[in-house]
Length: 330
Image 1 (cartoon, rainbow, N blue to C red):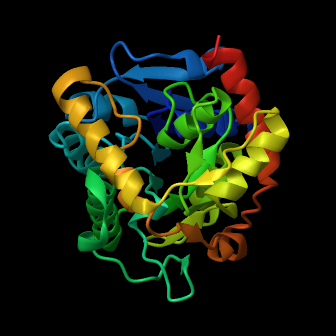
Image 2 (cartoon, one colour):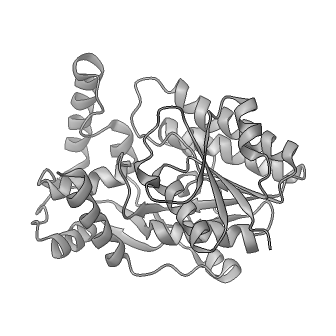
C-alpha cells in the first residue's frame, strides 16, 4: 500500500516540525518546504524529504507540491515587532496566495491553512470563538493584520472550490522552539530571571504536539471552508508565571506593572531598537497593546467536530523548560 505524501510549508519551524513529526508517527511520508540556508535543527533525525524553495517562487512551490495528496501551509512570518512590515505581508499574504494556487494546480485532495486565534473576535463573555465577529480594524500590529488578510484569502479559495480547512492555533508551547517564538521568548526570559513584573493580561496556552495532531484531524475530518480553534487552557499571565515557577524553581515576578508604565517602556525600547540596536526590543508597543485584552478562547468546536483532545498544559510547559535549558540556554 502506498503511503500518502504531504507537504508541510515551514516544516523546519516550531509548529511545522511538529506537524512533520505527527505525520511520520502516523506512518505517512512528509516533505518539508524550507528556505535556502534555513536552519534544519528542528528536523534533525527525521526521515522526511526536504524541498528547498521560497513562498514567492511559483516554480519551486510547484515542485514541492508535486505528488502530494495534502498540503499543510504552516509557514508564516511570526514576529510582533518588525522595522518594516512589507516583508511580513509578502510572506503571510502573497505567500499564502502562491501556496493555494500551487495546490489548486496540483489538484491536491486537502489543504490545511494555519491561521491564528489572533484573527478571531472576542465575545461578550470575554471568550473568543470561530464565529465571533472580527474586522481588520480590530487587528493589532502587522502580524495579526497580515494573517487576517491571508485567512480571508483561504476562505475565498474554499468558496471557489479549493478543499481548504482553516485551523486557528492559540499559543503553542513545547520543544524545538529554536527561534524562539514571541511566547517562547517570554518563557526563556522567565528562566533567565529577566521577568521582574507582569501585566494584567491572559492567553490560551496549548501543547504544540496537540496543535500538530489537530492539523491532521482537520485534514481528515474538517469541513471545507470552516475554521477550528486549536487551543488548550486559559491562563492569566500571573497564573502562567506561577506554573513556570513551580516547574522550574525560578521565582515568579511579584509585581504587576500598570499599563501606562508598560506602554512608556515599550515606546522607549522601540525607539532604541530602531535608532541604535537594530535588534528586536525587550517589549514592543504591539505586545503591550495586545495585552490590554485577555486572549481567552474556546476549542469546543474542534473537540466536537474533529475529536481534538488537548492534554494538560503543565506537561507542555515542562517540555518547553527542559528544551530551553538543554538547547538554548547553553
